[in-house]
Image 1 (cartoon, rainbow, N blue to C red):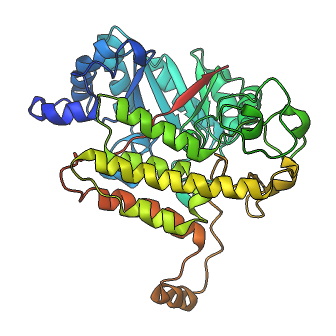
Image 2 (cartoon, helix red, strand yellow):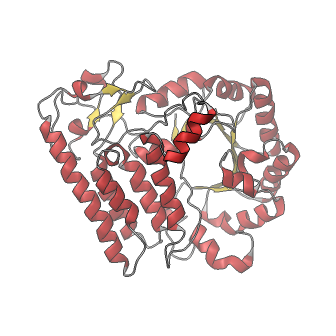
Image 3 (spheres, rainbow, N blue to C red):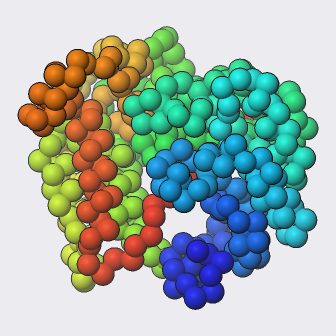
Length: 406
């Protein structure tokens, strides 16, 4: 679509070149990722954006149904000749590097062979997501770090490792386990934008506090005194404060942000609390695009401020208690669960064993589902309904992926 010159307005929605923010001096270094299945159209698109970025990445990892329908992402991984042409065409015709992000195969041998083909085509950085194409949603499971290590040992270009990065401590563990040159995270950053931020140098307070977000000890878990498992190490700010900061940033940008993206980001960022404060979750769900936009922003901010008040109430109720006493362990995932006013990862629980047919039919008829599935459905419904909002540009939401250089 980006290569079609008839879609100039649509191109500006995907990447805005007119207002000078995207790809500008304050947005560097920047790698632009394309989904593609036609080498010539990909080259045309990449040439249009070549002046605005430092490299072009080809998405060979998306496992979603939209990628299946569009014939891109991980659904190209069996068409090696096509993938070679996609990468090599850019490698031979662009003045900037070409990179590729991909998923692993079932065997180490085929994964390594695939990575070496990507390198031979001209990819100058490889990002290896250690999951199979089938691992998504409730079947996400764990990424295979051994396969990432095998890729790193087999190629000569830098390798970024992706998968299982939930807490700050996972960054160093992933680098050590794989030997990778960097770590990339996508979804984890949506739940805790401070994922790559280390804990403060000074020890964290051993009691809860109602101090502001700028006082890091009350909003983080550091190596001392909370370094014993299962306590996570890293920065976990109050999510309501992060949400207000995020809304302020979006409002001050000249480049428009699709409002369904804003809503989706808020759902993820505030998830630990919205699963408890269901009335606020429903209010957030009901926000629609409207003019003037100031009224809509006020609704978002009012919801977040109301949530912030409730989180301060809950935090104050346990003031004086040791932080470690507030950290629990999820029985389904065996991962730490932080106090619900702090930004933290969300892990979809494993799917239960298939029930008998008659039981499934009865539950379906009754409209029953588990609370985690209900929360996921709420977010999915946000995306569906947003497409019907009057006046709002319709583009597919994409996730920005962030790399931490090791």
